[in-house]
Length: 308
Image 1 (tube, rainbow, N blue to C red):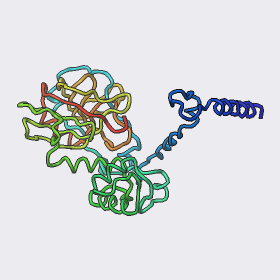
Image 2 (cartoon, one colour; image 1 turned 180 degrees about the vertical axis):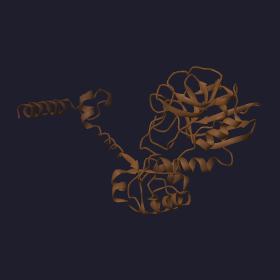
Image 3 (cartoon, helix red, strand yellow; image 1 turned 120 degrees about the horizontal axis):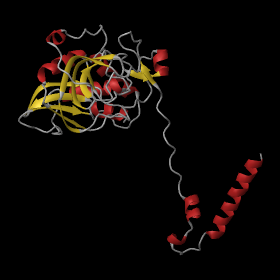
Image 4 (spheres, helix red, strand yellow; image 1 turned 135 degrees about the vertical axis):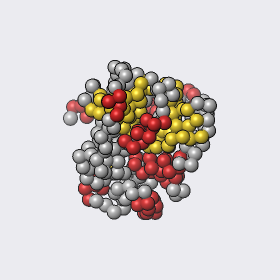
């Protein structure tokens, strides 16, 4: 109670001071004291409330643990030449359903298993723009219907019309299929360049203007461990690499900068948490990339992972 009286009395004194300090008509605005200008200025709009926690919209099996982090090397690995016997062994296959497109939705939507979400997703504007809807950043019945139709077509579960990260990522991949380097952000060279687009979370390989691999979806470094941008070179490849730091497999690892590498993960690459710097791929994509790249090939990284 005492603290309230003190605060109220202080506000009253400030208001009284402001009232007596207001200049007569015709006085230059610059002469108005800062305290008065602050009191008479229209208050800034309140900050937006934090986004609701997103969770998988369907139950995940052992192959897709929720919010899985990645078994990435934080430091350069010990480089050695694998034996012929070691290289002859292919990494184990991923369990069925490992790479299913499971969208992340608000907890309330997941709990009630809504058919058509009324909530605005974190990629609402981007998804509206891609679907050529009215871009206002607010979910509507029409938005939900259009988003849900896209999700059904591309087998995104649940198809609830929520504009989440998996839906956005799938749109980026669909858009890039014909010409991933349409914007010219990956340098065109006479030699092979592995292109890592952090903006769209896509990777591909081009030689000259011809795309020889991809594009495929990927997951790059999280906030605080972003994948380093610029030019790099593949300096070591290890098909059956095992992270000594995290005691986890890193199949088809191709290291290009310190502990950062292209490699497969046995879990969803669409989680809202990024890697520790590596470029994570689905197993099949990592296997194909292994056959495309070799030691000494160049890697170019640009952009910024959403949310970092």
